[in-house]
Length: 286
Length: 240
Ligand SMILES: Nc1ncnc2c1ncn2[C@@H]1O[C@H](COP(=O)(O)OP(=O)(O)OP(=O)(O)O)[C@@H](O)[C@H]1O
Ligand SMILES: [Mg+2]
Image 1 (cartoon, each protein chain N blue to C red):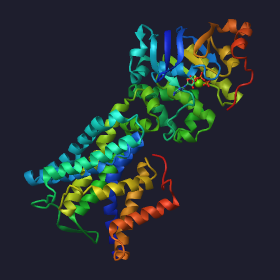
Image 2 (tube, rainbow over the protein chains, first blue to last red; image 1 turned 30 degrees about the vertical axis):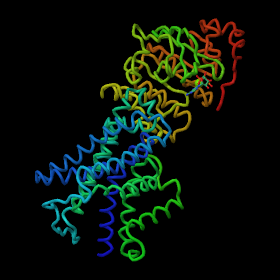
Image 3 (tube, rainbow over the protein chains, first blue to last red; image 1 turned 90 degrees about the vertical axis):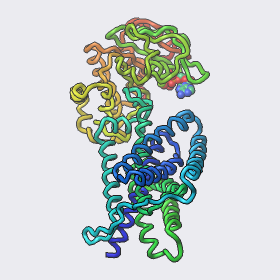
Image 4 (cartoon, rainbow over the protein chains, first blue to last red; image 1 turned 180 degrees about the vertical axis):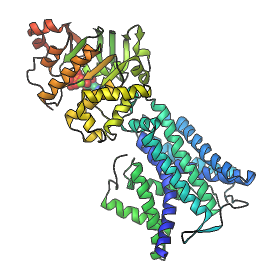
């Protein structure tokens, strides 16, 4: 039972990583930009969630704001920050992105204070035994939301016209345009979806930890970068698997190696080991 | 149908094609031939909207095509089979074809899909396969099929026979003639001059981005010195 519970905890953590890292992969796959500021959007999702919930008490409404608000902001960031520098060498958008991430953290500090915000009336904290597993409601919801969102993404990408346009554009934007696909719309869509997922993840983490702080995006940002490398840079499927694996490894690692290394160190040791064996990542292709 | 008037185009500050005049009348096959680097692909890519026009104009019917945004050109009836095929290699054969018909309503897509699969039954057998895993010949069929999905009035074909075995080349040219008989206009770029001349109605020979010779294919066929003088007649189909 302990193993199963550890495994489940790992999947839980992994699904949060997945929600963050998928957005990063989407952006990298389409534009070859390492979108570091993505983690700033994750933090923003946390803030939207806690602020809207504390003032309205509606979990539904905070979820919608965190998801769509952050999604739209992602598009705005693309439009204002990246669009003009797309044809520059890759380090230009990378530097812009790092700068933007730092600026976002500082902005949150100024706007919301550096000590972080908690839920005045924390939702989803009850223990809920299901199938012999003791998890909090919030944790079950996390698993459910991740499955729905990732499943939705898979459906969107493989079964819809928009998804077809997106996949074609990732492979060859010029040819996609030749057949009537608007590459700009595809990019907006891409940033919207990726950012909305990150915003949702940020809100979930805010609820689970009952704390939203300006710097909560830092560690996920390193981890998400490492995950997308592990997943084969640009491969959504690879990213999902890598994220879940990392979650599980961390979960077991904290039990067995917890007195030597902390959780984040375990994650990075794992990533370094995998990349030493497979520097090209574990997966290739979309 | 297609009227190119004093077109200069190129990349950045580099002009590759200089003051090109070229007319392709409706329902005809026009062959654009010339040595490597003459600017054939550049010309096609300019018509498709991927290379910058520096001066001159491209008219299709009575509309100035060079003013039409790239993504709209397929709706004006222009479809491209680019050099190197450039399939969406991670996508299946079916998805590639569906992207080809992206600009059209659903009914047209399924009708055209049927048509393309009748024309190239091999694609039907491979419909769920990732297109990057197709053989060279199958990839070429798919590149043509993808363009046909868009119901083009003007088909731009770059290096139809490159890398194909003679049997396949024959098949492709038979397909071309069939398309022409259905009223399609075709601008054809070929390394295999012999093959191009036998299928085309008119010929333009490009040399360093300018027209070296222009006339009917019949004339070029009769007086082979014309082509020989510019690029040499290639009797063997070039293989990669
Ligand atoms: N993307 C590009 N950027 C800069 N120069 C280019 C580009 N593509 C082609 N050129 C240059 O333009 C010139 C014409 O190239 P183009 O590909 O049009 O020739 P081509 O007639 O199609 O030759 P081939 O028979 O080898 O395909 C060449 O000198 C080439 O180096
Ligand atoms: Mg060429």
